[in-house]
Image (cartoon, rainbow, N blue to C red):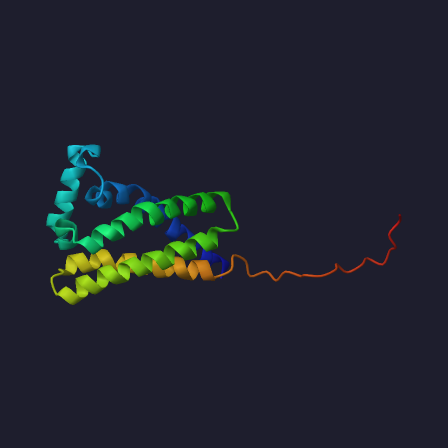
Length: 166
């Protein structure tokens, strides 16, 4: 079980690191002024939309803009907390993974409901969005699994047979 947790932690760390960089470059263009971004990054987003057929990023319906604000103000800072907790071996890493995973699954449920229900999504777009749902589920599961399988003993330690001296 320990090796599996290490593998899951490595996958989550890699995903958190990539998202911490990519999300502000692509997603936040919908809510932040375009003047903050160099032309090459704006062109990268245009290329992504054209290549993937991501009509949600092209049209930016109100619910997507709301989800991007949620991502900017809540989920993105959680990515950094997760990265810090992972590097520092903090006990609250599981908690932040759980919070991030639940928030990601919740927001992706709305996105996937639109994408799948609209019948406008290409296979490429579905292939891009489904892994985010999987990442959220993986983060939730990681948040629910204890860090160690070692049992802890709560209570007095067994004596070694000698009396304590005052």
